[in-house]
Image (cartoon, helix red, strand yellow):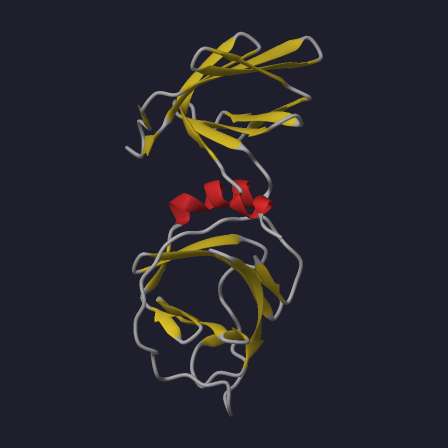
Length: 229
């Protein structure tokens, strides 16, 4: 994997789709317009089937491509905001956005807010994430480190350190405790549909914490870059 302009921040992307270069902006003779998107927030874009993830900092934009992590610097633009590093650039103006990689332009880049929690979890090193409803909750597992259950629509956060993992047939089980409160997580390889979003997941997840029972859906978050130099 290649990295430009910064250190590795773990995330993976996928997708394809190209187009012609969009005219109408230039780094020559323009101005530095303020970027209206929020700083230090994960953003997921779909550009006609080509996906990428970004995070903004003051005057820069970090992006994750299928085999490359790059930090782009903001440069002058005749219109909108423009970030560049080598042969990679990202241009944005209002609802219009375009990513260009090695002369190939990926057009019609649209934000995908429903994917942000999953990609942000991946970036933070989460190995498995699950969600459920009524009331809304989510679970994040970092193998060998912790279980984090966020429940009651984000009002309650319970972290269980050093969970123990075991397998029972097709079921992966995590157990742990904090004080006298015990948590048990069962991950079943079984098709699951989220009751709110209708999104399909490959795993059904059952969480029991402090005698409260939660059921939902989830999937593992993979990190193929770990095997790359």
